[in-house]
Length: 198
Image: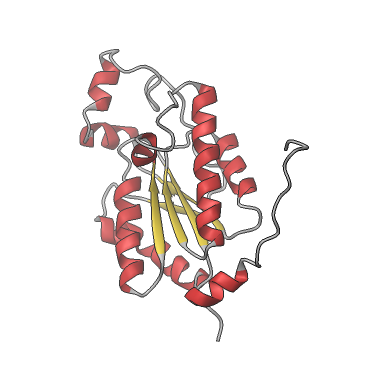
């Protein structure tokens, strides 16, 4: 941090949590392209809202259309994409929200850095465990086909690596389940973790 900067002392973040009567959580969905991260995050968002929880979804594609639109897909840009997203997630969580992050974040080191940035906030690494063959068969954006044809460079799972989480907080399998069925284990955890005492 520059010597010219003076961090401001703000009111305790817990004062905001009291207003919302919930504890914040960051749920970080990681998995291959087409694994179902965005679908699961959206399903959790809707179900949590129906239960009176306060939430926000940070979706990788949406962020790349705004906050992260200046970033490409090099290793350095991917790292920065994850860092910026984690910083925004923390700001939202400190305001008291349950933040659902849908981001490939392909490397273990990137996800570990996101957890460090969370600075003690409740952080769940959620591995959407969908086999590559199923992700390719879904191919909702046609990107796998283009990557196989050499038209998309640095595509995760094809021409760029994806490191499976070694010790995720939760594994969601989507291959043979509906979105609602797949997201249910996460919903149970989030409802408990976000509950306000008393």
